[in-house]
Length: 192
Image 1 (spheres, rainbow, N blue to C red):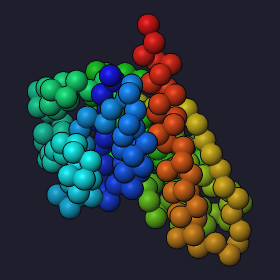
Image 2 (spheres, helix red, strand yellow; image 1 turned 135 degrees about the vertical axis):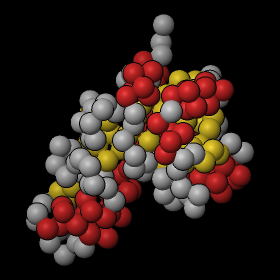
Image 3 (cartoon, rainbow, N blue to C red; image 1 turned 45 degrees about the horizontal axis):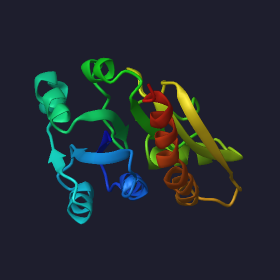
């Protein structure tokens, strides 16, 4: 069984979609939820789905002597970022090389980078009068939103769509595509 960890900073709708997708999977298991936000929706999900949830502070996250043993205690092989807003430290990228996933609510490289998350992205897309937006699932490297792209899915936009409408359309793509992309990558990557 391959164990994955989910990191999230917010409400966790992508985390919930991933948990539900892998709930009865016999090969991949969500083993732990991790958050930097004491108000995160992950705590409720952890209770509901019987998955441990760990709250950590910035200094703990930056400390490999804290974080790596924590992840190892759950036998974590892959990390999934689901609305996690902090830059992943070098030690974690090195230890989990090509094993950290992120999803971004735009068609990268457009509207990516530091500060481009959530509503900020959708407002920028609207202000640029783009005719399409979407989501990008990629591996994580040391730069925000610059890792190898695994999948992009797009949605057509109309002039009448608000940033909220764009967000809703893109979130639907995220919920539908993130977990299957993770599963496909892990299945191929972990074969002997």
